[in-house]
Image: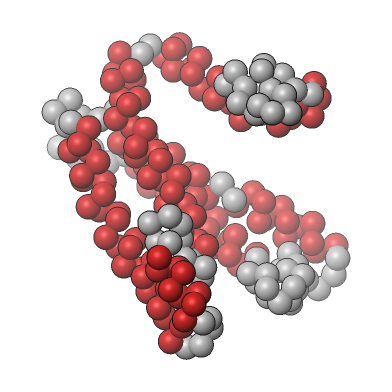
Length: 202
């Protein structure tokens, strides 16, 4: 039986294109210092072009979240026969070994070609279990992805018995919590927030 969902493949293609667009735009919208990721150069022909490049780049920032949404869509809810630990083991085996292999390379290779010092390489290697290496900022997405994987076994039992209306209610609460910075801007501190407590109702 073929379980392939064709429109998911189209979403992946679209997300791949947007990843390329984001990285192609980075040298254009204007890094301003030597230490910036794209360097000090800006390849904009005119200042008017900055608007269009920022639109391309801004729109394309949804690329990695789209991949995460697709991953969650395909994995949730978990199969009936799959335990939480089986799910974790399967996910860990698939993503952690290659991730750690490349993380170690990003600690060692820049040292070999003189991009940074032994001290930086050693610090990066020591901190591998805590965060990505200095030169591997693009690994940021691994942490939210792992967070999704940790959450899937918790939410799966609820999703198996939740109605469509209950799912929509949960999504509405999630959207509302995402908009909290705008609510703060318009209404100030709300729902338990104050200067010593940022942990609000949602």
